[in-house]
Image 1 (cartoon, rainbow, N blue to C red):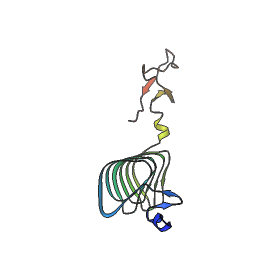
Image 2: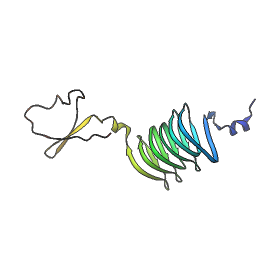
Image 3: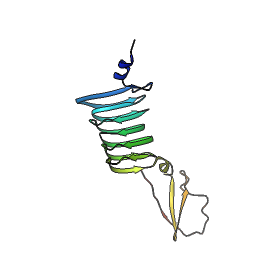
Image 4: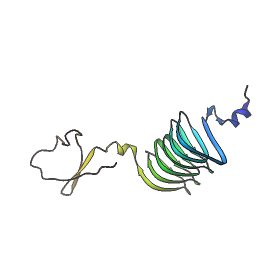
Length: 166
């Protein structure tokens, strides 16, 4: 039977347990990982991560990977492309470089971010085209099959420019 000291050593906090913790001054991990809960990383990790919970990159951690997760906390260093459906937080000691897709990016004072940010909610509008008609700009939904918007009437002279992010 485990006592409270054993639970602390296994990462149990307030009846929540981190599924996987990778720690080690000289530890280095490379590969593809699918984690069904959360992960804390305090070593070098390279590859690809799909995490159904939270990714925490500890102060000694360095991660060079593509990550898809619910949320992330960068206390150490991160490089790569990250998608987080909830939020990404870069703490005062965190350094993140790369492309992120999330609706909430939090950068604490002292934290560093260098890269591109795309809001997930904006990405859902990827199938929209921007239509310039004089000074007015209209966002319209374009039918993917025909490429035509049924609301545009014949005889309107417009200049069409496509804003499409890939």
